[in-house]
Image 1 (cartoon, rainbow, N blue to C red):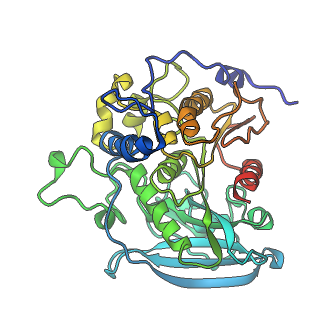
Image 2: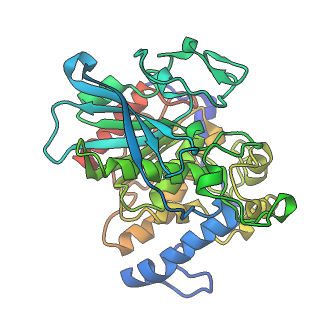
Image 3: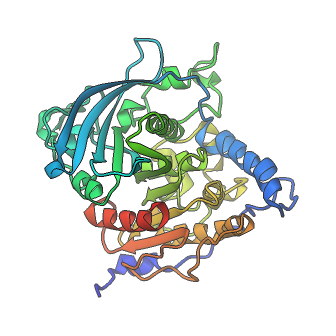
Length: 414
């Protein structure tokens, strides 16, 4: 057995919370929720409204018109075991609205109902996930520190440099499909970003500008989640995929978006928010000085959350919810939280606590949530409906992580 690092040991100790946590089965006015009907018709809509108003901004409700265009297709990819294709997907009828580009990998040997599929956003562009030179290189803003990026623009030097982050061949060989998209195709990840899809998906209300912008205007994490929903729309139009077996996956800030996407779209069958931390899988209320907090995340990334969330910088306990309530919105669907021992910034122990606190909602709906009394040992997958896994290592998504994702998917999607 591998030995935990000092940071890993610290991560295993759950600090006392800084305040009591809201009861996910109690309405804001204190009324207790005791039936499935009251959860579905009262508390669940209330929580969705509160998360939009106070944290992520509103989920866009704009009408879309999907128009897919296959850019290329290779039916002999992955040693002949799968098909690789890229699809340009227009979301709105107006020609001037930029499309998103989906990189798709599908097993050739698949059930008549279609393959179960992982849908998610990537940080580096589709071209970094494969050596195939036909895959489009994004032309918009790109994270400056990645391989092959020059002046915030991607270049061919980055092609195939992140095949371990999304190991397409491994996933296809396991019987699963992939649909992924560069997150910058939906919204660029910097505080001054205004596009590319924000003007179309979540236009600023007429007459609003600058300081007059609504405090609950759609923010970046919610817009990414909206983009994931459009990818799920596409999955439902293509017979290569089984629409009843769709999983959403994301790492770090994109793990936050994956959890939000799952909470707000019940077409998603399984949710994989990997190392999503504060603002996603980790609690806002905590007393762990080594874990990211609300004020820190709002200061460093003010565009991720709506303006109203900044009200809670110095008093997270004033929030009318915490992140166990977001997880509860996924009930009764399976969710896997995955972490690393050295990634204490993401608060692995606090995440496990959130799963415990969401379990009563799962139980109200007639299923089990977390079945472990304490965090599982390092490297041991707890594959209950609310599952948990922590490995030795740092903040990243890699092939070993995918082995765990696939094992959990085998239980809950096959």
